[in-house]
Length: 312
Image (cartoon, rainbow, N blue to C red; front, side, top):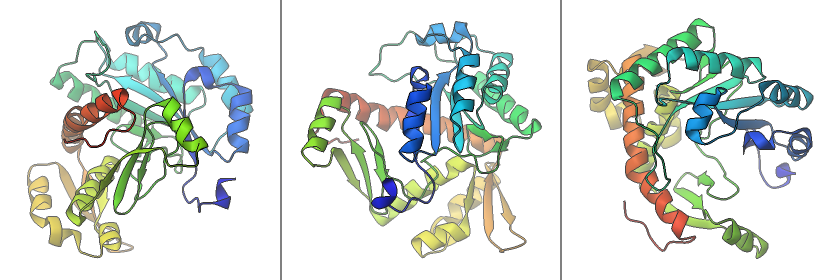
């Protein structure tokens, strides 16, 4: 159905709560053209689910549902940096995720948003660093493909992320859309979203109009989420060499040990790949960005469906 209105190049993804993973729902999604699903499990261990206020997940039932209605990509979201969480806990969760039917696993750090009540203690920075490295090394040792800072797949084409795409469309409450010159976010209000859609109006709550420099920074920040940046892709998108715009920054990143530079034998393209050190600092600054900007924006949008303006 989506093909009637859009040219779909990288599939259609839907986020699911574990309670929604049942055969009737999965069949409807597949019939509608959905090719990728992401399930917010967080942890298969009751002790961590209790900390997050979530119910336990029956892995065997989950596995049966996913076998009955297969998708191109089945991603399972897990959380790390919970209180008292160890590498052994995370290793077990990762193993179970792939065992129960995922071909893509995302292991995101716990973030304590200010607009949600939480008593979860924040893990020290050093411990987070150790866990992220342990997770990465374990997954690579198992032969999984690192597709971004926090995601790993068991198959080459199993990917689930809008962050590393040049453009994407988002549908539903709080969904975001990235265009070449604009970034849009839909209202967080279910009632207002439905009212706008029923009236044939866009449910966009806020729109950011990029300057060229802002678009470049946005492109680089989220492309780096994939742990690598292609100079050829940057130039193709913007029509200007990456080194001309950010040569000094890339030089400093290499000197500080955040990235390494590689040249493709086949294409001659220059690829900047993130090191483990670089990946941690990316995580650190992404967390800063989340708390400084996304946390504030989401907090306001939880209270007002269509704010006139937000200054960050």
